Length: 171
Image (cartoon, rainbow, N blue to C red; front, side, top):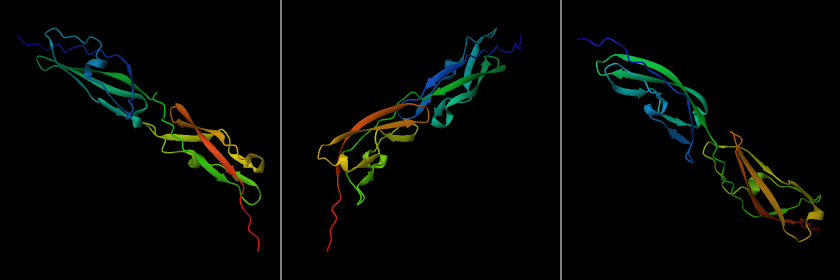
């Protein structure tokens, strides 16, 4: 008796979330939707099981089903890779010394203290960037740094900013 009947490969689409390291993995069973065979399934194999930040969005993954007689069938599942891990915003306090004209510009790099994200940071914005002599009143100010990744996830931290006027020396 020969079994020449192919298995019926049945796929299901899934979504996976990247972890804090920017990776995710699946098994063939994760995309199998009760594939069948008349004499039994010997193996299920997924063409791709590891994902990272480069795989964000829809990915086609082939599920290959082999029965106990060596007959093979396959189907394609869509594995949607999602990054919903927000960046880690890390701030440091800073002293901004105004230029001789009484103005100063604060940069994100002045406040950022090694902020990180599993897939990389795309933007850093500050709650306030331009300062004048009126800000150099001896009272420290709070400045918020907001860090955003390519998936739109964001987080913020707050730094203490001291604004000082520059000293002009004449001789």
